[in-house]
Amino acid sequence: MKITYLIGAGASANAVPVVAGTDKGIKDIIELMKKDEYSFDDTDTLDNGENTNEVINLLLSDLEWIRGKIVELKSVDNFAKITHSKLKYRRKELRYCYDDDLKRLKHAYAVYLTILQLNNEVDERYVKFFDRILDIGKSKITPENIAIVSWNYDFQPVMALSQLIGVDNPVAVSNELRLYSKNTRIIKNENTGISERHFLIQINGTLCINNEQNKFDDFRYFFRHFSQFNKNVLKHILCQFSDLKNSKFDNSTLSFAWEDDAHRVASGQKSIVNETVDRVKDTQILVIIGYSLPSYNREVDMKIIKGMENLQKVYLQAEDIDARFRSIRNCEKIDITVIHNYKDDFYIPNEYKTLTST
Image 1 (tube, rainbow, N blue to C red):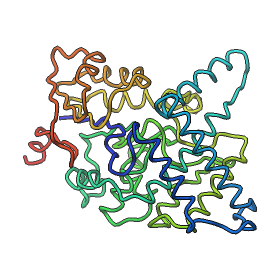
Image 2 (image 1 turned 120 degrees about the vertical axis):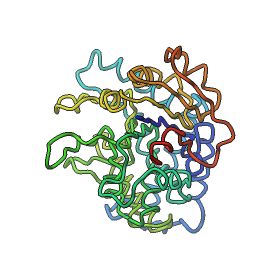
Image 3 (image 1 turned 90 degrees about the vertical axis):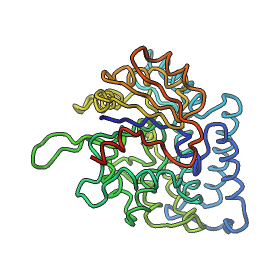
Image 4 (image 1 turned 90 degrees about the horizontal axis):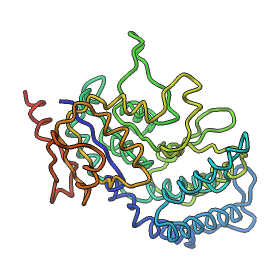
């Protein structure tokens, strides 16, 4: 049986606040950076020569700005979608148009997510889930009959597997998970030349940066070299943030699914959405965890879910989305089961357990 997991913010909620808790999450990080233990002398500078306190104040200002937009528009995604719509309208008349608000949002939000995850423990549900479904002893540890499609831009899956197998290189761990996102190239088998099947697809991108030399300067660096958040780590992050602010380009690879990825198509690749549809089209069992099928993702969700031509069963480990799912997909011949009282683990269908026991 081909099984696809479609996961949202609720799947990382033990480490990263869900939409309703984002405002408080950002407020907590702001208060953390204002503590005396993270204060710097007025003359202190970053590795790039920028004054440390000036960059901190700039970051704090951007985070407060995001908080204001969340209060006004209810979520980061709503704000990003509205900003992107304005940009699309302006591009009708201008050959090239870039929106500083979207750039500002992505850069500050990526820093927030980085500090947050360094300061929190990993969501243990990922660790337990991977321990149950991955075959750690094999050269390819991910099962061919399972795919995970994530709307999250956090780094919880990689941090969880890193903890499970004792490897502190996030790039190597990402490769083990066959992680795929907008800024990832298709991996082909060295012997056959056939594209590898992705295990984990992050539709909204990941926490990394693409600099002017077209090299990835990952936020993953911080997860590899630092086990927890401290003053030294903050200085490294501030330097990264400062470089982003000083760049005339949007170097963030945190990218919403509905943003244009024409650069992928121009290089001969499919869009991230079409690639995802192709990867999961043979899905027979769909498990939705911590994802509310929000309206701003509706178009993409419809493409992915309607593209599952052989779908037979759906398990919903998310609150109050039964009716919303039925509005996306004709469920006349599909069994839908709502999973209750299952908060400490990710649900694994009995069909998968049966397959692995035979």
